[in-house]
Length: 184
Image (cartoon, rainbow, N blue to C red):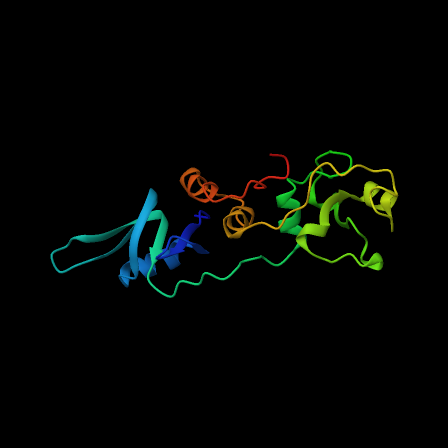
């Protein structure tokens, strides 16, 4: 089973994607303080002295006790997350490409003082990236189709899991910023 369970802290903030084994361990150790969402699986264990087999329902979202950290969260920039944020669409020509044909483009080139960060990077096909070269979009006469943004914690958790379940998506989507998609 490849389905991941969304782990929250007691305040309801996402902190990790868990395997079913990690989830089962937290449930058995009684470290889950609440859960929501659909059951994703039923795990069967051993038999007790009376011959009754243990069973454990695994919910899709669990919350565990612990420290609540309210610091500003900005995920590290990676090509896979950048391409997911931009839905694998070149933000210059508007065509969707496989990841192998995409590249990271710096809107303001780093050689001109641009930063290697979320708000200065977009997904570009190799052709558009080569055409733009070491110029700004204006200098290259290429219009940017969307404004780059840094995903918040909830958007990051959506982007970092290819198999988000409907109830997990519903939970995460309530906290997406107004920029939650480059094409909203």
